[in-house]
Amino acid sequence: QVQLVESGGGLVQAGGSLRLSCAASGRTFPFSVYAMAWFRQAPGKERELVGAISSSGGSTLYGNPVKGRFTISRDNAKNTVYLQMNSLKPEDMAVYYCAARLSGLATTVGDFNSWGQGTQVTVSS
Image (cartoon, rainbow, N blue to C red; front, side, top):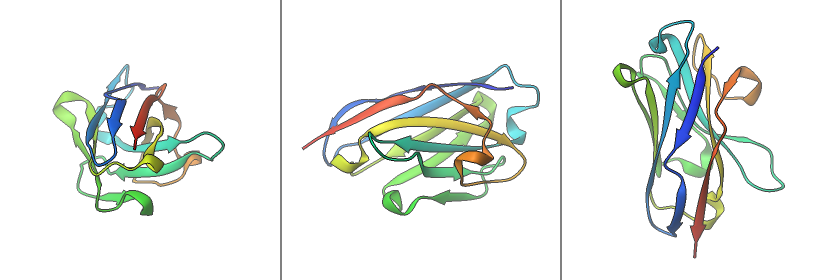
């Protein structure tokens, strides 16, 4: 019951940076009660966690491949979640999806019931 729209994807060289945004609208509950996450899916691979953030922004969790390079954040006043991606590698190339759920922070695809359409991130070497 929340519409999510990702933006900010594109083409970047290895070692570069991108900042993805996810705008939420049409919510049944205030945005501040949703835990949010970014997932990604590369061709031939399962969708995997990139990062998750609690409703208040006080807790975060990252998938191992992006720890130390990516940062998830949120601005509840703007109904937006961000993913700052630094030191990008070719293996980061994937479609990145924003996801939302009521209740606490979660890390698996099945825990989230609202999804954006995805935004493509391409990393050249």
